[in-house]
Image 1 (tube, rainbow over the protein chains, first blue to last red):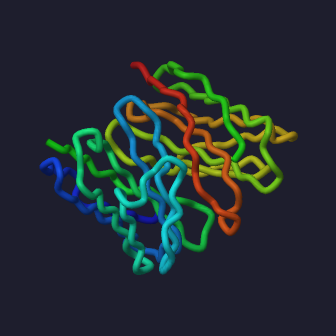
Image 2 (cartoon, each protein chain N blue to C red):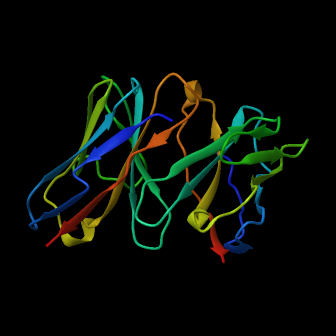
Length: 114
Length: 112
């Protein structure tokens, strides 16, 4: 299947700072990318959908000014957690789809805010 | 998006077939049935999807009832590495939105 890669896989940042997570589609052009977060022992929660070249569409309850999503190219989307706080510590997962009907997921990024 | 109902957990003996059920009684005509699995601390892995016909690939088979209100994922010879949380999701066609909304899934434990 298609490959979606996230970087970094683990990151620790200080409270109040911003951290960026990258999501790349390695072997296909991703017209749409999705960002999820997952807390321990819970299911994945969709945060936002981004289409290349357009503003992201955020799910209800997700702060767009806190979770900045950029999808500037067909192979790269970034999620920036601004002014991070310990409650933002979570597993962040991206996924991507191209012209087909299948969505592929990245390996996930663990964010710890101390 | 239609909601799905899955058992919270299931056990399966190694080497036996694992049959994971999913109810999606409010599925619409333009919604596919997708299955993903997530092994602890990893991103979800795509398994299979279908619209109304049964599907088979190298990982699994998907059996969808004629009325499309339920489906079963079959892992024909479960191994210990198949232990994971399995998610059944219904999703509109890509060009109509296409996002995946995850429920709680079924935690499958394959035991020796």
